[in-house]
Image (cartoon, rainbow, N blue to C red; front, top):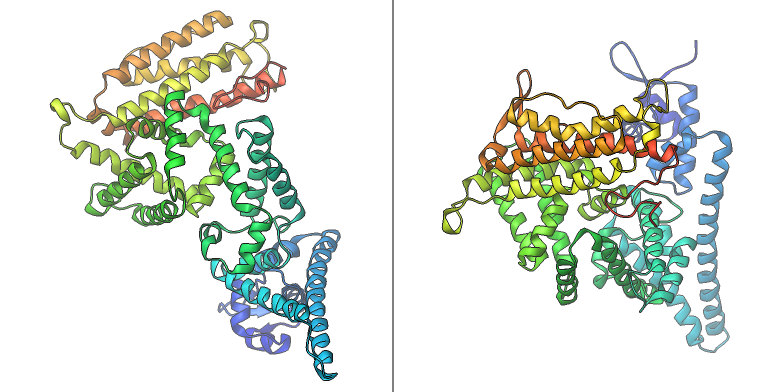
Length: 528
């Protein structure tokens, strides 16, 4: 029987602390066996694993990366070791240069002369850089700092440098140009990889970048060398140009003007928003009508007023975009994660709580001028309905008449059946709201399919228009013993998300058949 060690024995044998072994167990790096009484026990194989952990930790890998490396086959270890060797060699070179500079100064002084000012300046520069690098540590956690230390020691990676070079060449050009938009896509890809911890393309954390005015001088000089401020401003404008399609021309012109007038468009608003969503997350599960939840709603409204400059048109457009957040593309979702410093799943829970608390707030609000109640929830739902139905109609128009019986797999719906299902969903929603009626019949061709869809959309629109805010905010039975707000059902599987889900399937069918797919929230690959 293989020899086993209790945790104290194993710690002494391996030369580590019991606390370290507890931590490795907690993070899943080294999971021991257990006795029948629940005590940790370790074997010879655990000792080998621990030796690997210690060796990789010595090489500078953070614990979260060590776990990934241990799971890799031996062939992939070579890349990891090569990368860490390069990092150590870079540090060795830097120390060698500093030692050489100091030795030159010593020899100059020993020979009766004075140290060359340039040499002394070089020594000071090397030492100051190390001190400045340590000052950047405050923006990171312990595990992420080791990876970012290399970034601050070595500067931007090759891919980031190429991006900065290409962006500098476009400064002063139209941010909406194809070249600028291609650059935005590259920037988003690099930023997404950096956000998810790709060691090959690290970048400043959001917290570090927002506080760049307080960076140490050597970091500011590096930022100036790559014109980071100018590049980020240009990319921000290019990204805004991409979002232009979400707004009317008149509203967009107002947004651009608002951006120009903002003295500090990001830092203060960003900090306030991060804190608001942390507070919303903490409130999830609490009373949506309670004093604390309603105070959070008021903070959100204040931030919205600040972001929109109090302009009603901009506010309405942003609220409409907000109401479509479940359909945001992946690129928008990672930006939300980075902006709010939380996962998108956490953001969604906080945002859902906010929406529910806002609905309560609207119900409690005093009647507006001329005695009419506010209708923000209804307007938002109708705006989203119109946009989603318009996009769906564009897709249904592309369904080819001669392929209704085609199916990509024996277990999949035929194309005609799937398209008819998409076309019927608004009609089914209308039936649910009216509490009477029957499922529409299937259409045999594309013309009749689109005509049926139009009838179903009109019926659903009529029911939505007739609904009061009170009924939208009220509950409806969705399963035995389960109730949900009517607006949540309509935005979920009762209508909107149901359409979007099957519309995605239908898009794939058309792509396989070689039919051009229209864009849903912007131009598709077939329209670029």
